[in-house]
Amino acid sequence: MKILIATGICPPDIGGPAIYAKALSEELPRVGCEVKIITYSDNKISQPQVYKISRRNNILLRYFKYFWHVWKLRKWADIIYAFDLISVGLPCALVKLFKPKTKLIVRLGGDYQWETALQKGLYNNILEQYYIDKKFNLFERLVYFINNFVLSMADCIIFNACILRDIYVKYRNIKKEKAIIIRNISPEIDYIPKEQKKDYVNILFAGRLTACRNLPILIESFSNIRNNWPKKVILEIIGEGDEREKIINLIKEKKLEEKVKISPKLNRNKLLNKIANSDIISLVSLTEINSNFISEALALNKPVILTKINEFHYIGDKRDLIYYIDPLNTQDITDKIELALSRLFGGYIYQKQEEKKDISWDIGEVIKKHLEIFTKIKNEEIHKEN
Image 1: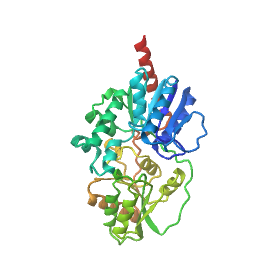
Image 2: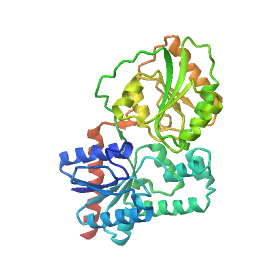
Image 3: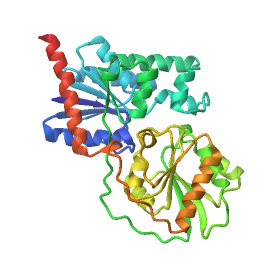
Image 4: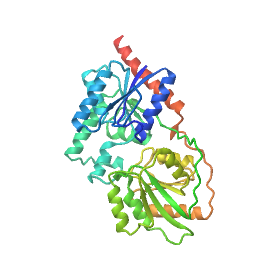
């Protein structure tokens, strides 16, 4: 079977879609599939099966070139597998519009429209409430229309979490039988972290610095914690993104330069080492679908302060290591940080609880499920022709 993976990013770029594309491109050939990848990139990529579209082009030219490459490769591919609804989903959906026999699968791990509305300051609430309210301006209506077009063109929509699938089924009129769950790949901690000596306790956030990550409220909550702990407590923020300057200014405004540190993003091994040497992990996003950062932290047995608008909470994961918070409640976040700190300094021993299997799957299970879906979608076309 021949699979064309359409992704916005690909290694050496870092991010969930890049990691997923790499894993599939390595594993699917081992079970008899041929894989080609098309991506936006200006990096040097030596693999002959990877087709690049330069990011230096303006957006219309980028999208047209992406469309044209997918158009040319459609005859080769049995399945086109797109990793979002706009940057790659739209060009792929247009190919299917003109060639209806094209088999298109879309994979979603987030919601671009909601995240963009947050980033533009058009909204400030959780994902589900956004689609309940539907107070869209002209730009949002356009994105909503494009997204619905791509969703309607897809033969199958793969979600990495029930929380996102259920929102789309309920508020975006996706047929449930068309919505499939394939979990994130379980993290593999394949090296021994280096121990670092430090005379402080740190709370760590790492990821894209965007509005949906709710970092101003995290900083506000952290600024309210008590000062009489046995060791100095600092908040470390690692990452890049549109909110970086805003966060730096907030740190200065609150005179927290000695207590809140902000650093550039790290590669995966350095980040795993950082997680392993941190005391508490924090992710208080307004909505966080299914975070690899949290999965890796839990795999390293780290306590996490985590938004309850998240797949872990949604499926009822009650591990002792997880402190769920209301992302709109500053005091709740402060209280949970202080509880985690009091347990840390008090020598609290966390109960060992088995991870929910529904959070992530091993690579073998991920590949097996993909093959089932690919085969079903391909055979549906064969049956129609017969």
